[in-house]
Structure formats: structure tokens, C-alpha cells
Image (cartoon, rainbow, N blue to C red; front, side, top):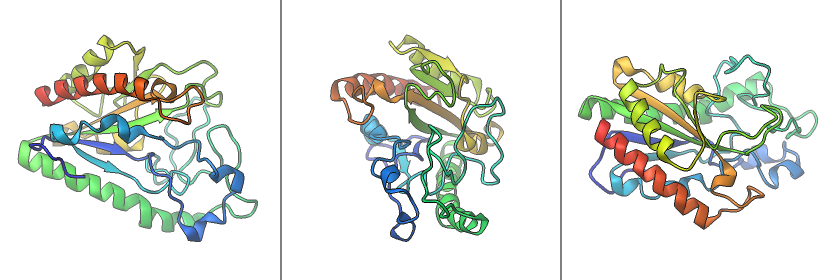
Length: 258
């Protein structure tokens, strides 16, 4: 989505906010699983409705991450090696380990290759085109990858996640001044914020974050109950307004910095 205001070199990506499953694939999934796709970043774009007027470009995936996960390595190289359960490129389970496909309908390598070509790489090509335009027109650009997660996912860690987690591939995906700008506002906010733990950015952050080429990438993960009702299924306007206020402050700082 192109911005309404004067363009600035920032792109917000929503790779997990889509929930569409194509009709030709839909009957492969368990009906109880797709009645509510729990691993979706529900309502996340609603927190960033200010972005367009600030000149920020946005891109959102339409397809569910259960079709193919845009934030996983296309060769299925694990993002972490500490024993946590991380759903795969074409996951066969949800984050709690429950099967999402009818038995015998799990995608094979041929199906996965087809999904990469049809859904995965077109998103990456669109992101890359925008970032190259930023570098051409402004000298640099920021990709901000936006995510949310259930506040407690025992398959990853037993305790509650921090409220906000800024990931930068261990500091490799962006210049220090850009990272510091984002963290300075997050640290002023009422949210408990950590840096690169327990998430340091998925494949999108690691792939596009190339500061030496003028491409900087940040990932912000946040608990769903910070902007949704306690069941983490319904948007909470009051909570959402509070979070939007701090997000807008962060982007003000990022625009000034870049």
C-alpha cells in the first residue's frame, strides 16, 4: 500500500496477518483447525493506521502462514537450535503442536516447491523492489517486520513472553543508531521490552537486513493480549489505542533518525 503523505523510506511488513487459504487447498486441512487459525497475527494492521499519513509504505500477506510461512527459511534451515518448537515453512502443526492437516494430506516436497513459487517468492520480490527504491531515492531504507504472538506458548518457553521484543539478528540487520532509536522509545513505554530475546528476528529480518547495502531491518514481536481481549481473539480498542500511541512515537523517532 502506497502512503498518503510525503513518502519516507520505511516499509512495514505484515507477513502473518493473512488468513486466506485457497479453495484448492482448503479441504486438506482439519476443519477444527481452520475454523480459527490461531497462529494468525489478528488485527495487527489496525495498530498502524497512522502509518500511511506519515508517508510509510505497508505490505500485507493475504495468505495464511499455514499455507506457507513467509518468515521461515525457504530451505527449511532452523531459525533457532535451542530445542524450542518453531513451526516450519509449510508447517504440519500449530504452535501448540496440534495437527492442522487431515491425515495423509500433508504437503510433500513437490507441493512445497509450488507454494514457494506461487506465494513465498512473490512477497519477497515485492519487498525487495520497495527497498531498492528507497535506497535509490533516499540512500537507505528500513524494513520493519511486524508480528504478534500469544502471551504464553509452552512449546517455546514455559513463562510468559516479554511484552515487546525487538529483533535485529543479534545486531546484524540494522545500524546501531536505527536500533537505538527504536529501543529508546520502547524503553520509555509502559511495556516490558527485551532485545533479541527470546526472538531475534525471523528469516525476513535476516534476509533483508543488509546495512552495508543501505537496507536495514527490524522485527517487533508483541504479546497479543496487549491489544486484544484476554482470550486473545477479539480486538480491544482501548488497549489498541495505547499501543498505537507508542508505535507512532517510535516511527517519529525512526523517521528523524533515518
